[in-house]
Image (cartoon, rainbow, N blue to C red; front, top):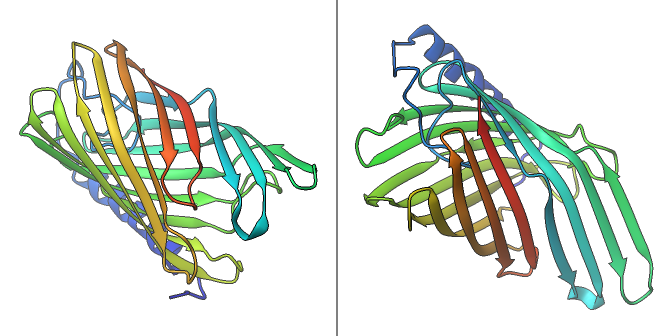
Length: 277
């Protein structure tokens, strides 16, 4: 169903404000400053420690998509460098601001030989994450609520249509020592293809991790998304990578994903660095 007003975005911003106000008002003494939580790329169930910063950066990500539907024969390459700055407000709440330092898109039409190139700064995103339980390793599970909003602040040729907002629900279950199942459903309001209203988008990310030795954790994952817009194809990707713990405050994770549906990129490669201060 198409919504003719940006209600999903307004609801997202209200959730951000309510979560922040509730936790600041009810903040309780928490973990010792010396106790460090698991570190890794988002989304995950743990918040940044109170008073500390994190930077999550992908120095270069590349995606390739070959489009042949409807008589087309095009190759689209996208290079970008996404980032997020995170700060722990309380023992259970952090705030995050991020975007893309740059985006470069190359669209080559193999039939005509024409090539379009667009580049510039990406859109701005705001997120807040509230940990419901398991923040400091108690028990086998952890879960958080993470509302988010993305604004069309990027360069004119590459920014998204309108504001996008929703909520993610990261959940983790450690079923054996060093082995976890992570599931993150996401619910969002996004602009439709005609850019005259909003549609609902549901996405999920399923990740399996298995530590093979201290500080080396391979993972495999499946990601999918679908909207309520008629004729809009669902997107599915499978892939994996390895997380390397450099030290207590730094993690590096190369990853590769492959599209399993027509609506997904054929191949996506990334290298993510997470640093805590």
